Length: 433
Image 1 (cartoon, rainbow, N blue to C red):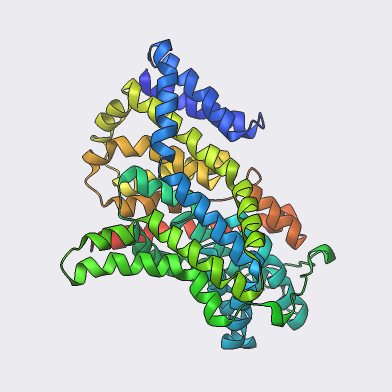
Image 2: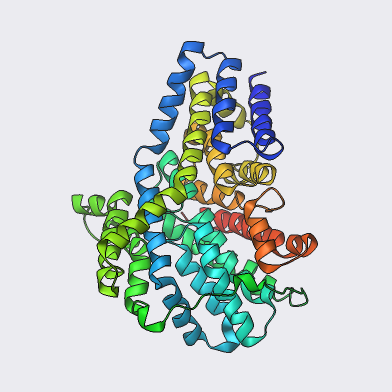
């Protein structure tokens, strides 16, 4: 009966968000209260579960998300992302334009939130399409695959960062494993798959033709790459150093995601601010806008934490753990499958990842799997088959001026390839770590 209640609550959550068009945060709160009551938590204790769920989930996470948003917004507004793109285009040449855009999307997608990255990168795709007279879907899909994978797989994006926290995984190692898994997934879903889509007719709307930033106003190449990738560099270095030498407290301090993001934002404030002619006040205004951009994401993360805490406080997690002990399915496949089902039903990769974490996290002790790999498995599942209930689906359709049919056969299949390739990569990697 308890598991039936959980399934009904998740179904109700899906219906509230999709059919009822309810705000995801409000939906999480309403369903969490109903779940707590149905699962036998005393009425006067339900609000305690709500506040504990929000506090435990956000905690230090809110700092990382906000700092990540500030860095991403600055990279976009300063022109650093455009500099990276032009550099990659010059390096790869016209023959390998797809690969240039794919690598650019991967580099830029690490610090940028998906929606920011999409809006920023699509005009760059169109500038290439107009210049070289090439099919827009064929040229653009590899870059969008890169943006999608970084959003679902890699910290400091909200869902993988939250999963790292909930599973008590090492963020540096998760990032390194994520790189190993992400690269083949992007290649398959990007250049390889896009080569089958050359016949899709796409005439990008004139509205979305890119606005040109004067070359003299762009930051330098080295500056752009370093400022954008500093979080990745710091996390990678602090993850590798303990393997090469004796542990030192400074490794843990400088490897902490909060310190990594704070250092990165402080460095970028000056490298992409005064050094490029922007005042500190202008940079702070950019940061203020960035916080507004991700406020709802933070609330959704908090709402998912509430539902998780209700499951924990009601004892459901123990029942789920006991039932999972008798399942023959591999734990990493289970995490992927739950996330994939929720993703297809709800549409949001972030909600799918965080909801799955709430179900899986209390059972991790019985699963005996690497927590970093579980983060990546759920992240891959959360990207499964984006369709009409996903905002990303409609952004892609409208920007590229496509039919529903062509959007499904390009965008939706690309997301599915990413999800399946990610799972295969996780399972292969689990044989060695």
